[in-house]
Amino acid sequence: MTVKEYSDLIVGNVGKVIIGKDDAIRQIVICFLAGGHVLLEDLPGTGKTMLLRAFSKSIGGDFKRIQFTPDLLPSDLTGIHFYNQKEGDFVFRKGPVFSNVVLADEINRATPRTQSALLEAMEERQVSVDGETFPLAANFIVMGTQNPVESYGTFPLPEAQLDRFFMRLSLGYMERDQEISILGRKDAKDIISELQCVVSEADRLEALKEIENVTASEDVKAYLMDIVEATRNNAQISCGVSARGTLALFKAARIRAAISGRNYIIPEDVKKEASCVLAHRLISAPGSHVDPNKIMERILSETKVPLESV
Image 1 (tube, rainbow, N blue to C red):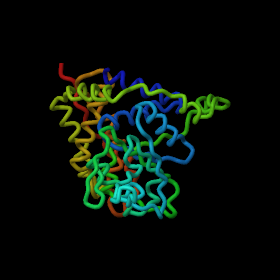
Image 2: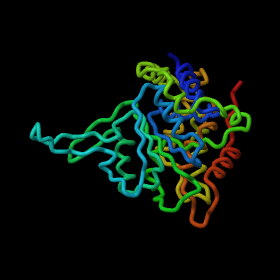
Image 3: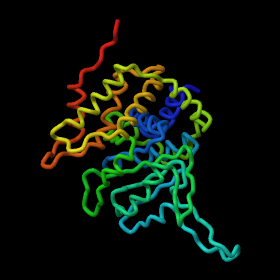
Image 4: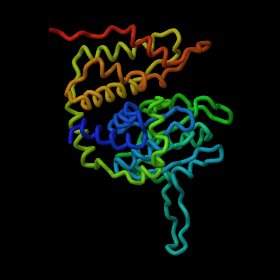
């Protein structure tokens, strides 16, 4: 199965539940194939949870939803050792993080201590409890959600954890005609319950092999670095994109090229992925209140795009 076929099957299946958001669904597929994690920032009721449930059903993975609250403990995520009287020994009971798709709902409502419990899982794909290390699934993805307009009682994610998220997305409202089309149809939960798995783990591994063969010219690599360096030399940004962000953008562009049916990256692939991969990694300079997304838009418009040589 090609990467394009893999993506189209998932987008088509999830699109039965979430109308008009094919681009966002495709971005999640890109993130999944890259082995990254997604931060979804949007208003309540825009379909974030339904999207992730549908995505989980489409890939045939286990799904766990964790409601983050101030009293949530790290062990509530990772699991605990408990004493089993029958066996006369301590046994590890796995937490919800031991799933394929983990929805960290309203992640910024938990304390920094609990938020940090996800760092090892997200970066190392393992969990350490009481000096013992437990591996997570290879096809593991965390999808954190945040409400961008409600900050009361929240603990903003530190820059180190934001950097662990491969990309930040927003679904936004549906178009008028799209929203009218869902009136009177089956409940989304019923549609999700009827969804079938459309891709397998073997399909994912096959797609990853194809992605490894996608190449980039020196001009395209230089264009990518021009964008990254522009974030580091901007007066409105106190801390630009790190090397982790550079690699993330390259991975995303590679997968975007493969989804487009090409085995090489073009500048447009880099440009399409730059904002959602890099914007949340930018730290505004003191006194600067400019939206990082606006800064990225300006950087992309001002960075010279290499032309195809004749």
